[in-house]
Image (tube, rainbow, N blue to C red):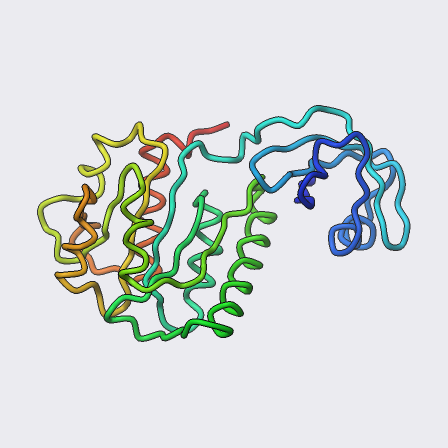
Amino acid sequence: MRRFITGPGQAGEPCVTLAGEEARHIGRVLRMQPGEQVMLLDGEGREAPYEIVGITAKEVALRACGPLVPSPCEPELRLTLYQALPKADKMEWIIQKGVELGAYAFCPVRTRNCVARIEKGTDAQKKQARWQRIALEAAKQSGRARVPQVSLPLDFEEMLPRWQAHEAALVLYENEEQLDIVQALAPVKHVKDIAILIGPEGGLERDEVAKLCQGGARAVGLGPRILRTETAGMAAASVIMALCGEMRAR
């Protein structure tokens, strides 16, 4: 069944009218017809089946044929990716793939060795708006019922209080040789709120890792090979989702 994300408060209503891009996609691209069913997603993790009852050039009218329920496509685990700003457009790829893997939210971070510089103000707001659009499109493509939020880029010190509020947190650190990610996850697999932080191309400084680990976070390795920043986050997210039971067959 085709899946579409609606505006706030629409999914779950007895009758819904879609306009704009979603209506064009249903009527002109997919050429769907009255009588066919679609799944509407509320963007907050719930879904409901609807039947198409009418299509015009600009709108699609739908009637509910089932209740609004939690979506089986949404993970119970809330995995937040803190990504040190990477070069070029790598952040876009990280967000897209992170959404597909089930990430709950993204927080871009300015660390000391970041080559990319996104200044506060209009530049950061434009970047954040673009990243949020990418998250929306990735959520649609992957069948997510919730659109992960992408925050404005934060300075390292500004990010710390948010980082320390998570139930469990892991810092991916290439110089950590004693504790790997699988070992670190063993005692916290039951936790439903996990954060990971990925450093930039130039890596994290030792004092940054020390500050991140204050309050219970742990530095972990990803094996003997050096991974690119965009690879490391996706590798870690995949391991975490699998070990926490979020990649089982539905």
